[in-house]
Length: 222
Ligand code: GDP
Ligand code: MG
Image 1 (cartoon, rainbow, N blue to C red):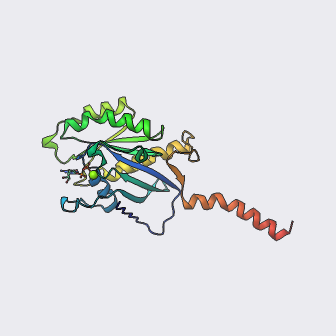
Image 2: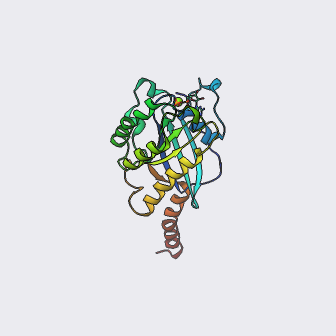
Image 3: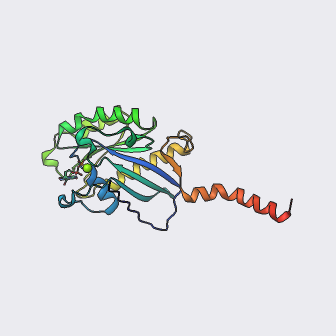
C-alpha cells in the first residue's frame, strides 16, 4: 500500500487532530478534491496510477490549529468494498457526488447509511456537489441537492476540484462544525472512536500543570 503523507506548516503544532473521510461513487472526483486541498492544484489524469490514500494538512479554524488526517477510498468504492476499518472513528466526512451524474446523486442515501452506521455516530458530514465547473452538463440542480442536505442534516457546497472553488471551504466548514460541537460539549474528544484527538499543542497544555506541580514539589523537598 502506497501511503503519501503531505504536511505543510512543518513546525506548526496543532490543538486537535480530526480523522476525515472522502466518500461517494467512483469518478465523482474524490481523489482530485483531496489533491486540490493538499497541493492546491488539479490532479491531471496522467498520474492516476499513483493511488493517494491518505493526506494530512493543518488548517487554522478561528484561531485553533486543526490537523486533518484525510482518508481517500483509493479505488475501493469501484468494487463496492469500502471496508469497515476505513470508516471506523471518523470525525468528519466529505460526501461527494458529481453534479453532471444523477446516478452518483441517487447513490447518496446508501453512502449516508453506511457512514452513519460504520463511522462514529456523531460524524459531521458535508455534501459536496463536485464538478461545479461543468454547469452546462448539470443533471442535479443546486436546489434539489440543498433540500436533500437539509432533510438529512448535512452541510452542503458545490465544489470544483478543477478550479479549486469551495474545496478548502468544504474541509474548513466541516472542521469548524466539529470544533463548535466540542466547544458546546456535544462532542467529547476523550470518548473512544470520536475521531478526535488532542494535538501536540493541547497535550503540552494539559501536561504542563502536572509538570509544574511536580517541579514545585521537588523544589520544596516535600
Ligand atoms: P474518484 O474516483 O471519486 O476519486 O474520482 P477522481 O478524482 O479520480 O476523478 C474522476 C474524473 O473526474 C477524472 O477524470 C478527473 O479529472 C475528473 N474530475 C474530478 N474533479 C473534477 C472537477 O471538479 N471538474 C471536472 N471538470 N472534472 C473533474
Ligand atoms: Mg479516487
